Image 1 (cartoon, rainbow over the protein chains, first blue to last red):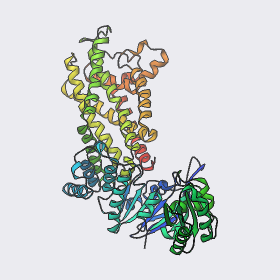
Image 2: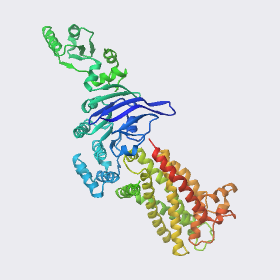
Image 3: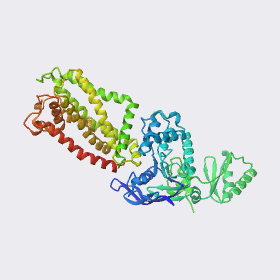
Image 4: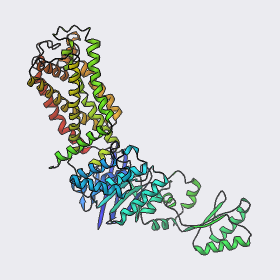
Length: 326
Length: 264
């Protein structure tokens, strides 16, 4: 059964000049995780806001847990949890205050609200900071508290809008752990992210969106396949670059790409190609500094699908080479 | 809808809890009106010949009461705009709570704050010589009027806060609206000294009618600025009441609808 469906959602701003969503269609199977992946301004947040009943689309239909979000938003709200891009909790209050307040707003009794707040604080390792104002929390703690607030009544469907944006690597790792635990509990999760790695880590399926449209959909592996097979990457001393390029070109049968001292090329025979390369290098008495067989990253996927990079760190030349998919 | 009241109270409690967590806010929001009482009493009080038995302070206090209560508009709007900006309103809107609760709760909170502020000001006024001469019931009615006026303005504040969305802009807008309104009135000086066109404005200004109503209820004879025989000058109680009802009838549904349809 589908827990979330969105069909032909259109949302425009400024009298139609900006099309935040342009015929967006997606669905999420019950109990699975869909990551909506896209750069800033792709329409991720708009999509979440519509599904979470905060925004009405110009046209299109959407359901959550089988309920029409436009016709019966009040019923949908009983079943969902939402954790936003910036921590939407009261910063002047303590973590405990916040969770108890949200418990009351979900119409749990006073005692039940307190019990639930304490359980959640415990579960997200916030018990020690429970009586401190949120202002004093670290970014990671804040996000965990925000997430806890969306889990007061076990939601059937959970929306996490960029749960790790702005967190340091450690905070991100912690958050991923928390989300993975959550998913084991069987909640249906729609997660938006700009981080390809995050989608790869957490999602069963990925929907890549760009300019308000889903441009690709599938498992992480399927998307990677769409871009092409594995690549051989060898790093050598400067003096060996020319020779290595020759060897790699012979093994892969295609042109190589050189990035400083790292030579790479697509290969179709997997580990056999790796062994061939090692043998040939050994015969030529070249000692590679590093050698690897790499599967394409989601960065490559994004690049080949959209023609532009998801993050500024991917350099231009790589784009043209890797862009040639079958 | 059965939860409207309890949800609103939860939101109000949150606001009170905020005050408990940062007591400075409470201290400063009461210091400011007290400062006004002292400044006006001792800076102008000596030089304004009010002709009022008991001195200028008798005329001044109703003016400062109304002015302070009028600032509720801005404080409600600022509080709401801050919640919007921080994404808290989005969170509330994703919860299965009554649609009106978030804004109703805030107006309750600001109303409670007004009770406290009015009490502190009354005490400060008493300390500097303010002595209402009417009976207890009339004095109580005056405070009830002030309280209701603040509550009605709170609903405009809700609408402004939801429309403007940026707390700093709200603050500027708040000052732009409340300053002329409170000074183009009979609150601190007689309107007879103003240009003719401003006199008309000042006479119909709800701040003036409120001030006149309070003066009347506190037992003052001299209406100080309620110039001509115009209707609002003759019937300040009725005019004020009419304004309050009008504001609430217009802005309560308008604000609740705005809240329902709002989005960042």
